[in-house]
Image (cartoon, rainbow, N blue to C red; front, top):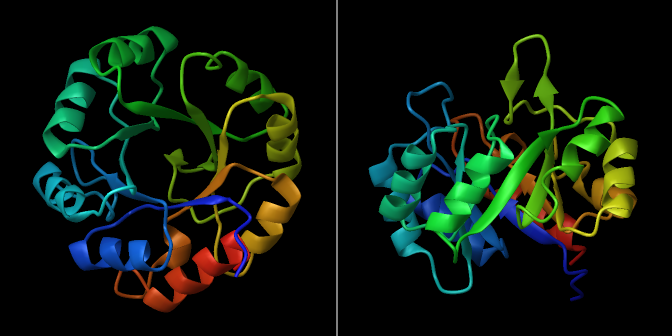
Length: 220
C-alpha cells in the first residue's frame, strides 16, 4: 500500500465504538462536536466526549470541534474532555484565540474559514501565525448552518488558498467516499475532514463508508 500522507479527520463521533473503528481503518484524528445545546444531532455531551477521548490509542489526535466563542468556556471544555486539539467554528477573533493559546500552550488550534467567494482567501490571512491549521468549510447561506452541511464549496478557491499560504490546510464540506479522491488530487490539502459523508441512515457512522473514505483519501 502507499500513503500520500493526507491526514484524515473523522468528525461527528457519537459512540466509542465508532471512533475506535475509524482509528482501526486509518483515521489520524477523531472529532467530537460539543456545544451549549443540541443545535446539531451530532453534538455530544462533554462527558461522552471525555469518555471517547479516554479510549483513543496513542498517536491519534483528539479534536474538540465547537461553535462556542467564550474563551473561558472553550478552555473549560478542552481541559475537561482532555483533547489535544481545538477546532473553532464560531466567530472567534484573533485576540480570543491568542488567549486560548496563552492558557493552553501545548494544544493545537484549528480555525475554520467558510469558503464563499474569493474574499475567503483574504479571511485566512489574519489567522496566519495565530493558529496551527486552517479548515476550509462550507456555509449554508440560506440557513446560516456552518459545518455539517453536506455541501461542497468552490474547490478552485480552496486550491488557491493552499497555494498561497504556508500553513496546513484541511479541506471539509460535502466530502464523501465518492468525491474525496478527486478533492485531494485537485486541492492538495494537508488533510480532509468529514462528518455527514460517513454517516449511515441511523445517524451513526457507516463503517463501509468510513473504510472507503479513508482508503480513497489516502490513496491506499
